[in-house]
Amino acid sequence: MGNNRTQACVRSSATVLDLTRKENGVKTSAHRWELSAGGKVLTSTVTAFRPSGPVITGQFVAWRNSGSNDFAGQWQDTSYLQRHDEMTLRLDNRVLHISYARGGEYVDAPLDGVDAAVHGPYVLESVTYSIKPAGQRKFLILTKRNGKVLTQGFLEVSNDGRAVTDSWWNPDKPAAKSTLVYDKK
Image 1 (cartoon, rainbow, N blue to C red):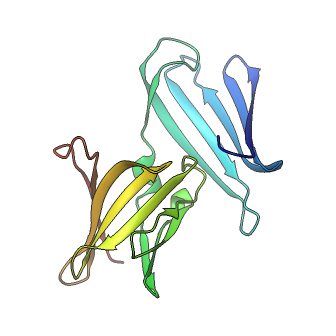
Image 2 (cartoon, rainbow, N blue to C red):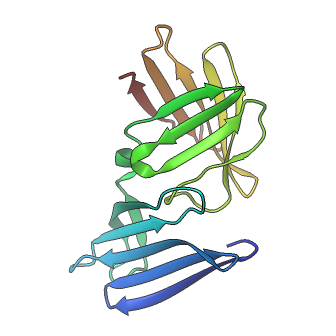
């Protein structure tokens, strides 16, 4: 969890876990995990408390990939695309602001490759982006956790400025690339 951070977990019922995270004794988020009656679907409701911003509540739903009962097993989060269906980009003074309003996620990353913290209720602790220009309309992005690269990829603006392509992959598996294309509204 890192320095000065704690997490408490209470089993409220056979199908509900309540988790509370704190930093320096201050509540930062509350998570409620609920299993469906058959144990095949996990719904997580997250509330993030920010000292200098609004309280953000979100929800994700995951389907069981493995395991047969209880919370143990492998789960697939199917709501990632819903949380990232709209992206806002803004370039201010050589700092790229990337945000996903529906997911409450954002980062303000300088364009010099320095790690910048990613914020949001679904973001794992110690996740950062480092961003460098890789051409006139292209940015190299490294996503890291605790300094270790998780993914690398590019944000690329189309020639006409009407679309942005976001592609990323695990550095150990460059052939397994994921891509989202955003059209300008």
